[in-house]
Image 1 (spheres, one colour):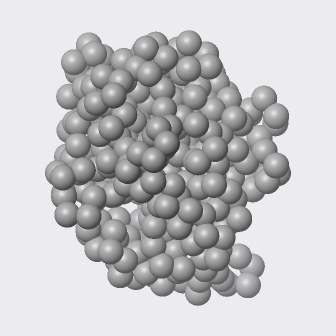
Image 2 (cartoon, rainbow, N blue to C red; image 1 turned 45 degrees about the vertical axis):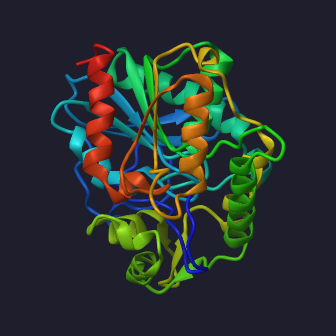
Length: 332
């Protein structure tokens, strides 16, 4: 998730090798060169949606799954996940109706389906790349889906690192709850009316760089995210991979899912990594994650000076915090 002007916040789409199995979102030549995938497989969800998984990094290393926030896509997080490539097998995938994946039924664009999709993602990776324990690195919307999945299944991942999930405190009249409700309401309206068509990815990259949040991104992130969230059309224009109406709907659902889980509701090790609640004008999500950790005893860290898009702002620091936790869990 993230805020910006009407011009845009990311939807990611870069492909790194030719599609396997006909997932057919876009031609690889249209996508930004990031790192060459050393494996590609298609996951098919319970309702028949196809999700394209790309494997990078060290196939002999511990497996980590990486996914993204609402309206973004995993390839745009390359400034973050490139720090895992030497030591880890990195399986990158986009949530349904984002990034490399085809756009489907809007009636099935919801947290319930996204949480269930993680079963298919894990199974496809195990079938193609071999069975091994895996942990998840998930941001925002995908972090919430991973929480729901772990609560529903009683497991699935060996450990979870959740970056700034935008959960809403349930307590009536809580100052943090009111801030989160206002934040999600603004994003719901903004996404519904955002610009969806661009002459060139550079336009969207410039828009990101001009926003308050985007000014703090790592220097290579703006262009990478822009190319990842746009698809070229036959008319020469570039369009958002995730339709604005779909993005808006997920912001609205962030209010209604009622996700504020007790720590023991998630059976695997969990680390919450949030934006900085102590910086001037902190992101409401940073305050919410601090509150969730304090109330329910989650292992928690905040990345100094960051907001909700912390993996784009300070990717190396975010990666270091995640790797430290994974090491403490005994995975490497």
